[in-house]
Length: 135
Ligand code: THU
Image (cartoon, rainbow, N blue to C red):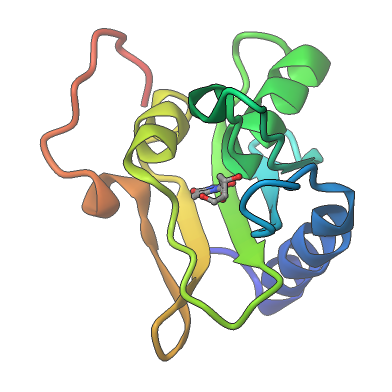
């Protein structure tokens, strides 16, 4: 669980960073903001490529920033993801797997079909593949 103030802070940060997205192909700009156990807040936006499959999602961009700042022990407490449209924008399957690597209990806040939704990443990716012993 996180406080309403932290949830608001993450959503605001995600909405702000999506302005930086590089999405000339899909025109679907996405922003993500995550909160770490240490209290850090890190953001990322999607970065597309002419070779479409090389696209980096906003969530994974934010995670790379968090690891660079806090190192390999980084633990994600919560992560918000938003798109600029009102369309639902739950994390893709690849991002669920990568988020889970840094916090099985991480709370994911995202735009669902009928408004904001939130649930632990382990519920978004049940029976996930896992090699490490992290919590
Ligand atoms: N995208 C994300 O950034 N995160 C997701 O979880 C789903 C999709 C981006 C990738 C691509 O640039 C655009 O949204 C359309 O798929």
